[in-house]
Image 1 (tube, helix red, strand yellow):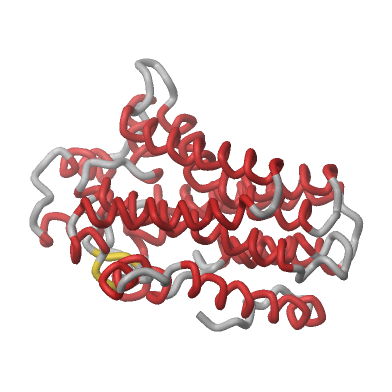
Image 2 (image 1 turned 135 degrees about the horizontal axis):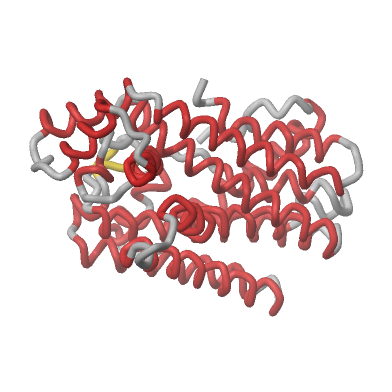
Length: 337
């Protein structure tokens, strides 16, 4: 990863947080290594494959709301690193559950080393994140534990699915808030707390992070269909093959329940009940979804959640950090253009 942040339209702030991003990257490298060569190859696999590092970036931006002398302090860097380690740990586990063949443009860990080793690698990374968090005090330890609980509950709820009569789209958004929004929220609140910005600022950026996380994941649902595997690092339509309904499909199912679905949408739902094990069958469904207006509806929902995230920032004082957070929210969905 380059230590340079994306364009947040605040050059002064970007130059200030670049050393923090470099420090996080060094600390991350230390955290994913340190065992035997065989174990290190496994635990560092996804970290060296790349990644957006959006969670550490958000921590460092939110730290700009507090004491300038604390904005790049060791606690802030350790908090940012721990959040990224927790995210990496969850990816190892997610790929096992989803039987994902690729991640970040490389073979997934479970494909290379098997499910058992991939799960244990995720556990090792979470343990190392916990060590970093332990040095930040009881409040951070408790918050991190609650966040990890939400990550697990979100994954469990996804496997169980909604109850009879429960709105599938609303249920899905709740799962996204738990599986993605919770950790983005924690990244933001860590930056505010550890820089001394105070509980009020932490509460604002926490809600911002939750909403941005939902926007980001909805955008990923679009990109999973609209982009190529080379661009996204994942096989397009993997969730469909595994029988996991992402938001475009859920919106089609809602239309069918409401009696408003068109012939093309009904055909997509029919194909989803067929055998998608072949690449050709999966590609046909993906192509049909790309051509359907439900994809634009999903894009609109991603932008809606990004706009909702920006709304909560009105409670923050105007300044570079707030401007950067607005840009951060837009970045989550600008990639859909």
